[in-house]
Image (cartoon, rainbow, N blue to C red; front, side, top):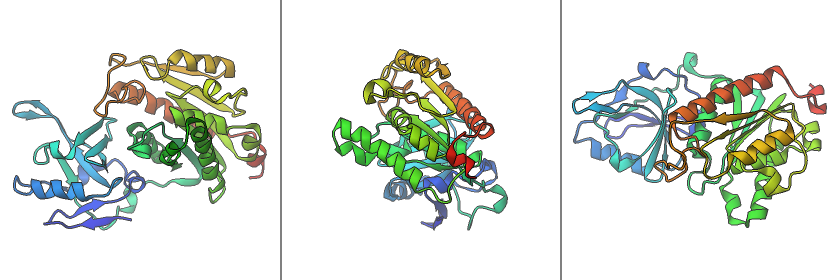
Length: 334
């Protein structure tokens, strides 16, 4: 629920990620807290005090020249440790240390309304569900940038989104950890209420392999799984001994050519064996370059040109899944 925080007149809205992402793109119409130089220290302390996963609505801009700034970009930010992750409506994704933010000129947080007006809320439907699985991330887990960006995009299309947290599986060895992630996906599917008419599995890196492995013949016959999308995925055939093609009507594999963590050639081969579409993603960023967290930019789609491609193909994939529902026993029951 919305928590209205009035600290020295800030009157900010703090909420969970899934709630903040249901707000539509109307950032320019909100009122923003513009702290004085004296108030910045108190605001910074407030941000440090927030629990991990806390979300605020935000606007941000960049210096263009010494005395010139860009136009405001609007979006959502998520607090994690000493950092804040920003996802803007333009598709820009950034991460900065709280102590390094220019809170006076470049970053402002939206002040609270008692609740989002009905006309700007986004209605999600329980009859179509996306299970969105993250890759290895010991610190951030479900809050990884590409996951929250795709969650946002899916919610805006009316999908109910479930993001399993796999961090608890890392305490096990590599083999049991992999099976635990598949088990977690099964639990999420089994606990869906009410029973959906459409289910789509999308996974990044480890989450991609787990999503594929979850699609056995019996599961797909029992659950209306109509789509499987692997993004920068591990190779489920090589790492999980997956010797079957997922019996899902819509399958797609997308991978960045510059991924230095998982070779694109491996996933091209998987696509060939599965007779599934393969999409090569390219970026102006050089292969091997790393982002602010030290992660491979190509593998995690951290470049602006990569995330734009991923969001577009992801949205098109969800649209296709809606128009070509599953041909399963579960679907025939509805």
